[in-house]
Amino acid sequence: MAKQWDFSRIREWGWREHPVGPVIPEPGTADRYETGGWRSLRPILSPEKCVHCFTCFIYCPDSAIVVSAEKMKGFNLRHCKGCGICARECPKDAIHMVNEAEARGLEKCLLPEEGGTGREQTS
Image (tube, rainbow, N blue to C red; front, side, top):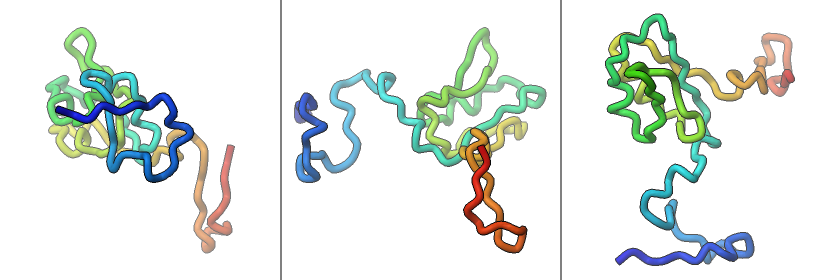
């Protein structure tokens, strides 16, 4: 039997109280946890290339592929962790991965030889 965790005082826990590894406290609750926040790469769909074969859907370990009316519509970024399996397995190269920070327009890194200090950010 799985250990039952009491999370009522989690904000007061020290490092010793935290379980080793990730814990989903009860079956069927993963949908309530947003796990895409630490993604460093984001999948981008090229709809004109997609043939709706659902290979990405089959391989996605996070069930982050959005399907509606028998068509691949995009990605659930709340759960996508940016592993890139969908892009690697897509037979039509309809998915490519981009830097998450650049996709959000949060940063642009310039190398010193490009005239920057390497720490520039754009907003």
